[in-house]
Image 1 (cartoon, rainbow, N blue to C red):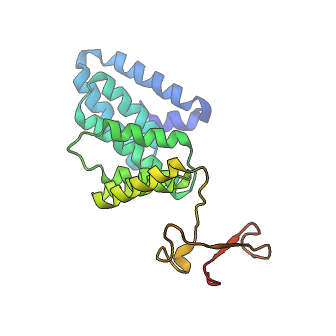
Image 2: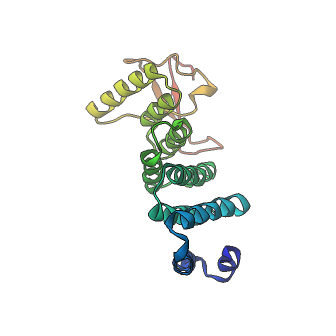
Image 3: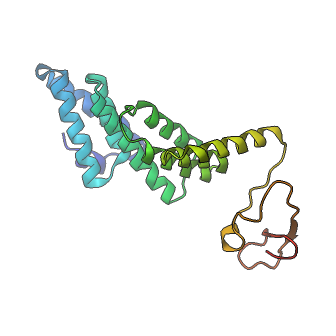
Length: 211
């Protein structure tokens, strides 16, 4: 079964269904080998097409087939790994949707408890940031580094957010004052910057006349 030929000769929208049918035909021809042997072979192919071509979606389809044949922890780890690799690329190019959040949650769900969840939580934090959920992203980052004090702080912030109607996310503060001047009750001035060469919708934040 030549995956590269299949990829080259199949229209993009039909490729995944063709791949699934190819797997089905392949398994039918190898019935005498048993599910465990076939699953091991398919798992090996899934890793090869990822390593050679970085074909994450195709690798996920293949490892799913291996899991159906012989569900073991190693195959679940491999599936979670492929999902993480796929989403790391999406984060880099900033092409994230709510579906990607479902995907990383799925990877965390199937990952065995004795595996390192840190890299997956970091990816989830990046996704949450890109989806506009900075506080939840903080919680994930803190969990990734097992910094439970920061988890408590972020969870308290989240509770505050739930009790208020409107909050504004201020970006770019590391270029100026950092987080230090900000505390509950701080009065700030919001000044429109229509002449800002980078962003006409930019709003400058000042405290006592300073940025």
